[in-house]
Length: 307
Image 1 (cartoon, one colour):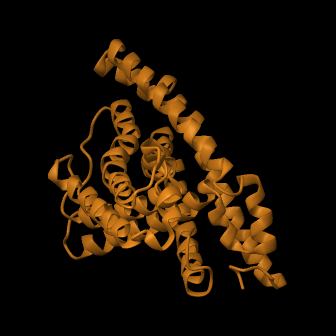
Image 2: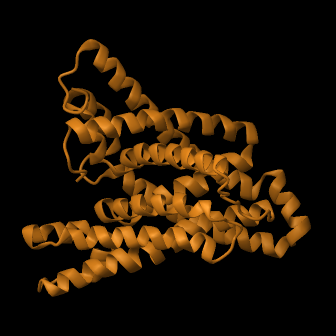
């Protein structure tokens, strides 16, 4: 079975191919780091921004962007290291013992989750548009300003919608159960402390908070303008629920990086070169379909819990 290991020769080829897709996407994510710096500091876009926004404003954006860039780099390195397997050990464990070991590393988990979620959101958008339900789009702003705005959004929105809701409810649950804990550590990675409660942990409360967080995240996309229309609620709510699950099980850095994948990662290729972006888009759609099949196999035949 693909999930548990003990592969036939043909199954091993499928597993190896899927692991290759994961590693390629992670490699592209790594490539997005220098691409982002190129866009903000060297590209023609930033030269045009100096003419429209002024040199002082662009230099300020560059400074703030550099801080963001370094923060994401630190989170990415942390995600590569665990939580249970470092990324360099995932391919061997997955090949020898089963694809379930993909979930033992944060960044490989995010690669699979991002591709599947990207495909589903894209498909939902097509269905809604065909039914006359518009999604809308972000307003056209200066590219460098827009790149900065979409790059800072993962941090802002994960604090507001995941940490402030799911993290706070996790703290309240621990207080009710009479546990002593460091609140900052709980906010960073709730499941580490909630799951220690065992049967005393009312996990339904956590899942309800994840659902509420996702719905509020979706509604906020139209409540506060920004060019989105009603169709975006469905897409963003689904994404919000998945982000909530990642936050609870893999921590704040996991949720931020999944959100980062939709924003900074995709935008870095978009602003670098539109044809490169379309090639990446097609690749993620193909990978996403494979990931959906993988998730179906995982939940139907494999281990039932992610963590």
